[in-house]
Length: 268
Image (cartoon, rainbow, N blue to C red; front, side, top):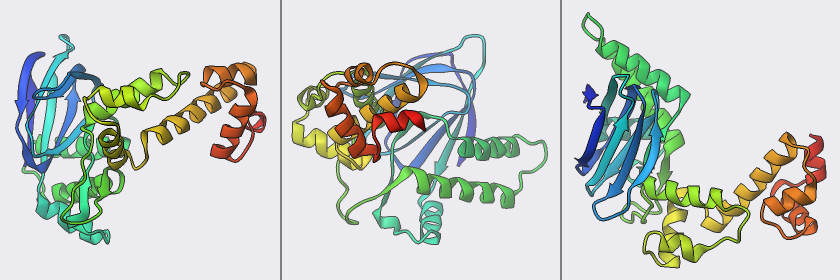
């Protein structure tokens, strides 16, 4: 099912019901600050512009609110991907539908998905009758993309591990990104959600495919690579900015992650 809505520029609070199907929302026009939270959780903010999309499938309702640009209409596309389509496409890719789940996505830009949804929007808005052959082809292409890039395999058909909702994950990633120069603090991250170290680490790993500390280390190195290639700052200065106490420790970690030294990386 697919529909286009013109939403109000401001919404204080809207309850999003639990949905058994994969529910995709695409911003057709306008820009907005969108906030999401569980019924008893904290609000987490994201910027949503034209072309960005949200994807969810949840057995629990949650809340949304937004403030859109008052000078532009705020239009969105709602698209439900039924299990028949998703399972058929999964099998065509050699995947087991019973062991797949989509990751929760909030305000992401994807050029391929944007192109497909632009085509779908144009087709359902056409003055003549929409071509079911064309629409079905686009829906299948969209589902292939989602399964290849936004799905994950569960360990067993009967066991679905706990994951972090998109807004919780974004909050954790944003916090780590803003504190790359500081020691990794698992207790603080877990405390953001009132979770134990074990529960947070497990949920993060189930969502991202790696532990929080592993993500943090990798992001530190990626940040250092950006500084090496884009600035003339000294290696020791970059090491300190990236959270390492010495150039030797920085070089050791950098080589372990990239296979080359910081100095050689700068030459590339």
